[in-house]
Amino acid sequence: MNPILRGARTAVAAVAAAALVQTVGSVALGPLADAANSTVTATTAVNIRADASTSSARLGVLYKGQQIQSISSSGGWTAVTHRGRTAYIATAYLTSNSVVIEKPSASTTGDVYTIANLNLRTGPSLSSPVSRVASTGTKLRLTGTASGAYSQVIHNSTTLWAATSYLSSSAGAPSQSLPDVTGRVRATAGLMIRTTADRSFTSLGTVARGTILDVTGVVTNGVAQVVWQGNVRWVNNSFVTRVSGSTTSPSRPTLPSTTKRYATANLNIWNAATGTAHTGEIARGSVVDVTGKVSSGRAEIVYNGALRWVTARYLSASEPSAPGGSSNTGGSLNRGYSSGLDRTNANTKKVIRHIWATQPAIKTMYGWRQSVTPDHPAGRAVDVMIPNYKSNMALGWEIARYYRAHAAEFGISYIIFDQQIWSVARNSQGWRPMASRGNDTANHKDHVHINTYD
Image (cartoon, rainbow, N blue to C red; front, top):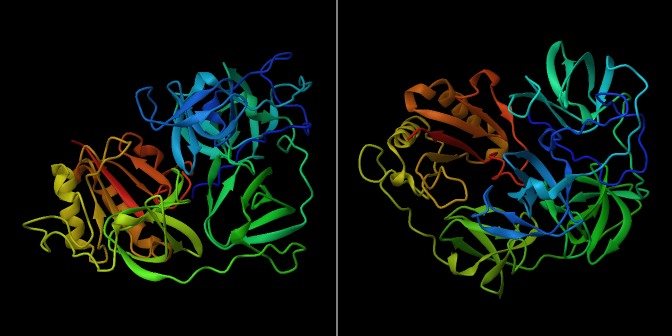
């Protein structure tokens, strides 16, 4: 199971105890990549890009002093969460949030504790594989051996390596002064977590409908202040409801009446009538509840109890016809609302035909498409959509594990499902956890992604 990755504290008032350093009188600054999902700050105005390249599309700008949630860092680029999706910023223009620490008086052996969700590696470098992720506050035992910015530690009887600057000689991560919690609320829809109450906010992802949040009673600009993962954050006040016994009582507006329409293409679910922030996707052929309001080419809809928007021209009063043939031995590989399957490579087609023949519950798969990542445009990948996935994860795992076991037969290079990845190159490590990308589709919870060799 992938641990919920939490960011390091952004404003530090004090530290519970002295943090471990590699040598007396100096702080060993650990690699940015080893603090899983920490917060980083821009040292100057820097572009936020769709991929780890200066030639990739610019998604926005992070100005000097602004903060954003990081996922990992390598090759000179830091992966970040930007408006619900993974984006990239040049690492040279970012700094991890500073932690006030003191010189240690203890030796470099004995028990230590992680002050962030920390990668534990098989060797003392970023190029060493990650064996596991230790959550904040995990107790580790130092062996007394250090190499560069890393210390050798023992975790559950296994000897591994950890970035020294994220270790503390006492339990507890750095603390910050937080406002008093006055009550609790429940999310009535998928709810975006914002860094600020104004329009300059950064999205830290979306929590699921039904999530319980601690609130402070402060509401401004229609957003409520919450304490989330040890930090002050903000959420849309319209989509929370008071938990019984709470002293706060935010109200939820009455949703408008709707009519039924059909999606004639796969639709992004936009957060507003304008802008690029979105929370997921509606599959072609799905029934969409529209309110009748259209603005800037987008139609307002009711989705999971919340008001959202989709591109209006891809809605129809009539159900679209199912494309493709129905046989897996001739004609198109596409069935139902599947798409792009005929434009995949030979290995991927072999997987697709086998799934059609052996998994009657699967009704939809997606192959070739334009994407910021190279695999779907190259025809190397297929997304196997799991029907009613929230109550049907067992089917997804049945498919994922079967094709892992038969990877050589089908020419498979890696598989992603349920926010975990397995690859041929790192087979000995099994299923490895992945950082959250903000929603179930991006986290591969509603589909199995199977990637093949050319």
